[in-house]
Image 1 (tube, chains in turn brown, red):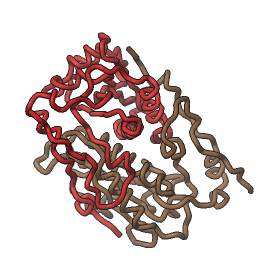
Image 2 (cartoon, helix red, strand yellow; image 1 turned 180 degrees about the vertical axis):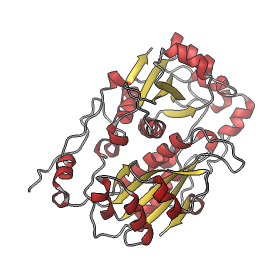
Image 3 (cartoon, chains in turn red, orange; image 1 turned 90 degrees about the vertical axis):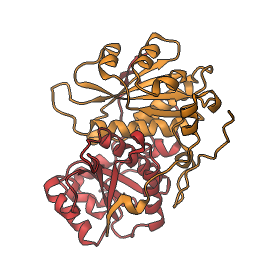
Image 4 (cartoon, chains in turn green, red; image 1 turned 90 degrees about the horizontal axis):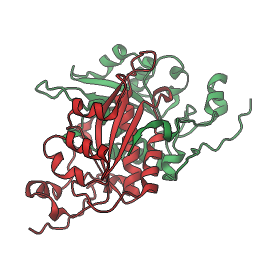
Amino acid sequence: MSIPVLDRTAQTEHPVLDVLADRWSPRAFDAETPIDEAKLASALEAARWSPSANNSQPWRFVVARRGSALHHGIHSALMGFNQAWAGNAAVLIVAVAETATEDGTPVHYANYDLGQAVAHLSVQAHHDGLVVHQMGGFDREAIRPLLGLDERFAPVSVIALGELGDVDALPEPLAQREVAPRVRRSIDETVLLSA
Amino acid sequence: MSIPVLDRTAQTEHPVLDVLADRWSPRAFDAETPIDEAKLASALEAARWSPSANNSQPWRFVVARRGSALHHGIHSALMGFNQAWAGNAAVLIVAVAETATEDGTPVHYANYDLGQAVAHLSVQAHHDGLVVHQMGGFDREAIRPLLGLDERFAPVSVIALGELGDVDALPEPLAQREVAPRVRRSIDETVLLSA
């Protein structure tokens, strides 16, 4: 099978930064190249400087490099199609929300602010030539014991991070999805009210 | 009172994009300059191309320009210190999460993905010379009737967007906070486990 090369740049109605227009979530990860540790550090640093409600910073990360038992364990907890491709990623990161403070107070913006931090991580990684694909489909009960998390922390997403791989190496249905154009709802439908 | 000029660039341990290192959340907004509509459109476009679980795009926005009844209403619903400064912002945007689909299915990643979209919006706006300050402190019951939202939509944050104003125009306690250095937990404390 030969997959056509596709320009994944978003068809934007208004100009945006290249790193935002070009960013996408591939499934074809390079299975050989180890992670560039400097780029990984910059990605985490980008997350670090994300904004949060009252600067609460309710994000934590578990970082697993390919070949480690932790990477294997996280990969094993992925569900459905994610199993078929995400194991190739040089790094699997579990994004963890601090859902309550040490004294038990709920952190209402934990998921929202975790999302912001992961967005910053993704933008930095993409700028540095890495690719990112976030997954919500994983077995939370299977992942929790691997991470030894306190009750107040919740694993929210698993982030595949690494270099882009060969689309031809993906199983057929995934390869077809890989080359589909990026689509989004229009701005007009997203803005409910404008005054 | 004279406020010293402060370089707000983050003291990063590892290099990150300038737009991420420089971004911060001011309270001093220019109260005169109308929003640059092209920059506002680019900020919303950046949010549009954010990633989301199964491309569900569970974000909506309500956009209110200074001088409109909607801007006035949103400003009136802000709580605490936010009242004192946010009314100056050229635009107040209510970030809204789609918490359930039309058939009532819960959208588990609504807040997380809304956070990502707002992060993209913020990065684009900052790149374009605007500033952004997100607020969680507002009266949800007061805001809801202004927006005419269906039950399945939840207002999550209010985003002040506009040009940077004069710190000296802020009330004293806010002016002092405005020039405090940006601080974050270290990466070592944020990464719970690394393998």
